Picture (cartoon, rainbow, N blue to C red):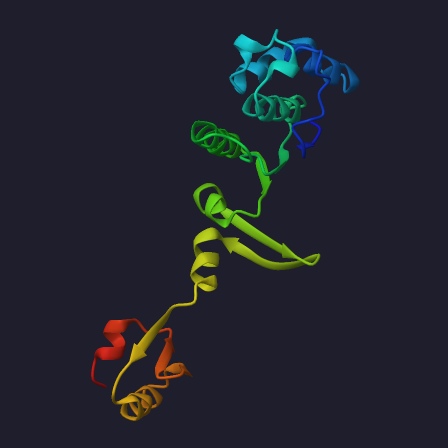
Length: 194
């Protein structure tokens, strides 16, 4: 039976051990054969550097080793915390691709991140938790659409007439000095006669 595994930090390595030895040690603790360490090292593209000591690994290599450790037990569920943190653009692209590949295999991959732009490019479904409560669950696209407030600022020498026209159309607006801030209508719709 596959054990679920998460990786929350890419720093739980002994610096004097090689990547391979680190994974073999973890594997022994959960009764995983040594050969699995080499499989996951190849999967995360560390096969050629598996013999090197972890202290010589870059941050990106440590992130990959952390992911390899999470995959040792062949889990159906992975929980990754900020997996792209500190990675260069190539590493970010790689982590996105591997997360999608793992999901395509039928695994559930939970990714915790505070970077909405990263999640918009990575996640298929989004769960937003705030203050211990579920705030949103659905697609990333739907979340962005709901969270994006469209407004248009309008200045006109005819503000009273514009206010009246917007009110007749049940448009939401507020006043900021000599400017109206109109919500949920674009500039074309505001300029069209009713």
